[in-house]
Length: 356
Image 1 (cartoon, helix red, strand yellow):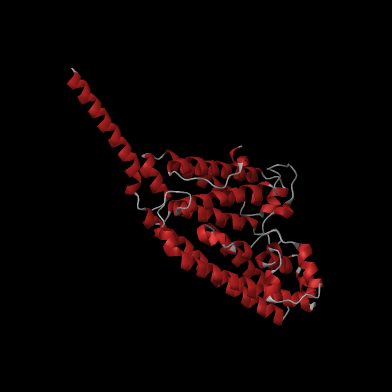
Image 2: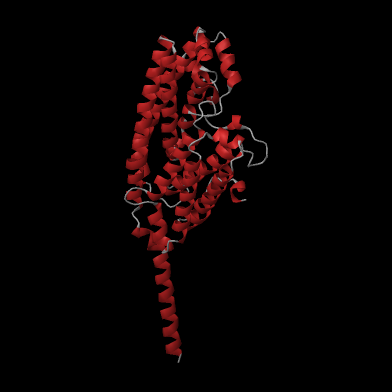
């Protein structure tokens, strides 16, 4: 009898060890390094290359406009700015890890222009050089300042304003400065990519952790600052469309669309994605199905608003805006709670409003 009990105990212990071993080894069925490689090859490199190309086009348009100030060149410049801002929104998913620590993304586009500071600088006698521009707050330079200078007023007023040589010179230096910053971003990612790909740590400084946290950060940013606060859906019911990203160029929704698309690409990957990783560990499709539905609902909301601007939809109290806000909330919870738990990721950015 004693021998039988001992045998049962040994078998139970062996079963427990096997179960624990399975839990520890589940992740081995998903090639984390291959996913990192795909993230760099299929998301980071194409998006930064696109940003470099469009930023060069933007700077060329600035050179043409400041040399020959007319309506045609202003129209070309405005379109070039829109394309660059859209490219930046695609590339924002890469603001993570060592690259994030260098704050280069912020220096390229910190939206919500500091209009008073911009006008104060133009009106001053301070030299307008690259160093002087770099000394300005991020909201008084980069894409945000360029948008203010070329979209704040109607075409005739904008053209007339550039008879001020300092305004002209400031725009010229802004174009060169943002081009340098984007090229630096491209270089930084090229230098960082190998370390990022080979970083299979499961801790807070692991590449998977960086990706999930950046997905969560972007979603929180879209929910609260790009939709919620302008639409009066956050801490105040007051509508203030001047808080919208790219409110002057009126492409707020297009930038949100690119943010969501980049997050979706990061989750599903090309050949393998985080959905495969989740499936490997969870051994079911419950979370993936919920995430798929959330993306579907968000994309449908954005499509439904495509015939108007986000500004107009908010001012018209369009119910789809609040639906979009709520659907993004749902996706946030799925990413920062369910996915983070399954993948043993530590969420380093939280906003409790996302859970309410």
